[in-house]
Amino acid sequence: MQEYSSKLLENAINQIAKLPGIGRRSAVRLALHILKQPMSEVSAFTSAISSMRNEIFYCKRCHNISDSDHCDICRNPKRDGSMICVVQDIRDVIAIENTHSYKGVYHILGGVISPMNGVGITELNLESLFNRLLHEKTEELILALPSTTEGDTTGYYIFKQIQTSLHPVKTTVIARGLPVGDELEYADEITLSRSLLNRIDFELSMIKK
Image 1 (tube, one colour):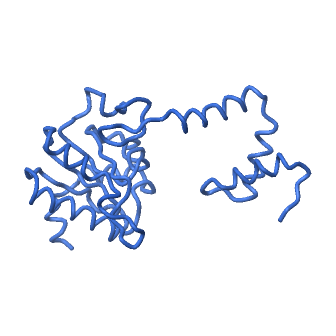
Image 2: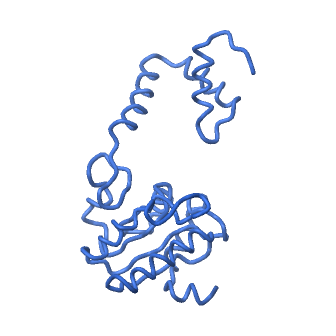
Image 3: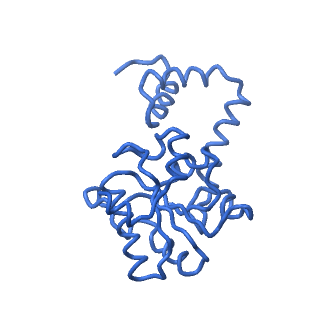
């Protein structure tokens, strides 16, 4: 374990190193960079992090991150509320929004069905999705889930529930321009945009497999 001349510096490095994708060397560089900044800059930085953690909301409609009970996307009258894009998590919303090619709304599941990892249907935001389909005028449900076994299982479960328990709605899946096993957040914007524009009927996607 490396020794530091200051326990305060060491504590800061230890906390920064807990962030995903940040190694020990990067944590040292970041801590020393922060140390060189004016107090006003550091205070603004720490205040922004604290406010985000303590004051942030989750949209009551789609479960997106928000500054109020409903997110900007759900409150935007220019968005097409008849089209719901179902994604795994918030990072996927950010990835799709960066393509500037989708004008509908979203529903964030908070994960995918994965018994191996202890994630079942009750751990996901599925009930609120089905309630939306019952009470909103949804014309199309787009399944934009990972091209993995877990993602496919989740998509199939949603599709079967719609067909057997709810009023059937057009269900599509994004085209597999994405490599199998990849997450949406790692796709480049052009590939993801084309996958959305070239989406196909969910049942046809099952036949092709």
